[in-house]
Amino acid sequence: MIDRRRLLDLWRRLDVTVRDLPFGLLLLVASLLPALRGNGTEVGGLPTRPADALAGVAAVLQTVPLAVRRRWPLVCVALVSFGFAVDQIRGYHLFAGTALPIALISAGSYLEKYRRATLAAATVAFVGVSVELYRRGPGESVIEFVSFYLVLALAWGIGAWMRSARAAEAERRSRAAEDARTAERSRIARELHDVVTHHVTAMVVQSEAARYLTAAPERLDDTLAAVSDTGRRAITDLRHLLELLNPDHGTAEPRTPPVGRVLTLVEQTRRAGQPVEFTEDGTPAASTRSADLVAYRVVQEALTNALKYDHGGKTSVLVRHGEREITVEVGTDGSGTGAASPGGSGRGLAGLRERVDVLGGEFSADRADGGGFVVRARIPGGSTA
Image (cartoon, rainbow, N blue to C red; front, top):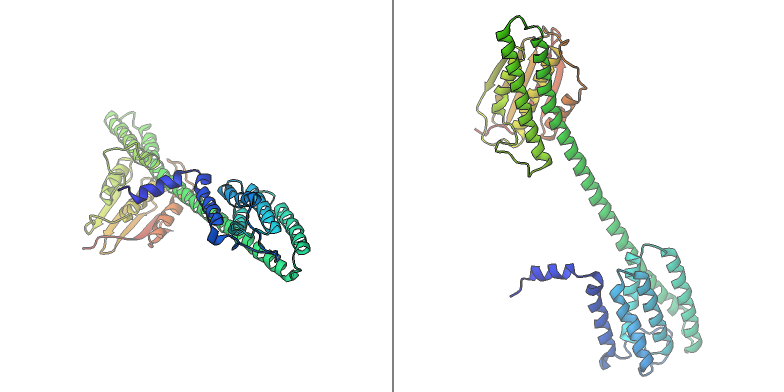
């Protein structure tokens, strides 16, 4: 047995003209049935006459063009309207006349150009046909013609509403896609800022320090080794970022650094000449959603700023794992100097605030007594134990 879903997929792949043709053919066959002969649309009160060859032409004109009602709606409505006019003036009253409102709905929905001109031309044609029917008929009331015109106008209006709704949905999807792209670009920009700024700042500080160690080869060797190690870590983190841009460029390492790697950040910062006191309370949870990554980034950015603006000053890092949140606090005492490193744009702290806010947490970055600073973050999603 053929899968229904597969059949539907094959049907959707067909050209829209092929999909619309069966409906037109169905109306044509119905118009030829003896039981429905003379039971179609009737305007003007003309007596029904027996079908002849011209009736067949009128039936074909009113039904077969429905196959192109979405591809060429103007052609469809013109042919169907002409066939309907022949049908009514000759008095056939074919069941195929029901195709006219369908053609108008399709024109109102799918016609892109000459919409006003089409409406004007259709109105003029309707008036001409109505005058001819009134002249030939038994003198039907004008209200009948006006009422039928309003029905046809309603059909066009339904199509126009469908067109507007479709355009609004397309606009909504376009905005949603653009918002998603903007959010993704912002997220990648934050990741790039966090990765590059921290490692490059550490390398700059270490390189500056190496200039004054030429008389102490053993310390110079350690400093250069630290620069090399920092560069390798930068490459590793950039590979993680590359995975965000290109999932096929995978590595065997985890894509998001856990809070457990905060100690690695502390050690790297210490090797850059920053005295750091690290305290970690509680036990990290096995799964903390995005909280561990955000906590890691808070510490990373805060230590980067410590190297920039308080190089050599005493720095403290506290990471506390609570039942439902992770608390991070990083501060300096202001005893260092900011002359050995480049300045920043403030984008890092703004990015951190946004990260924490997304998770429903709290973030602050304030000046501390003595000229230092303190960064605090409360990030929901800590351990459950």
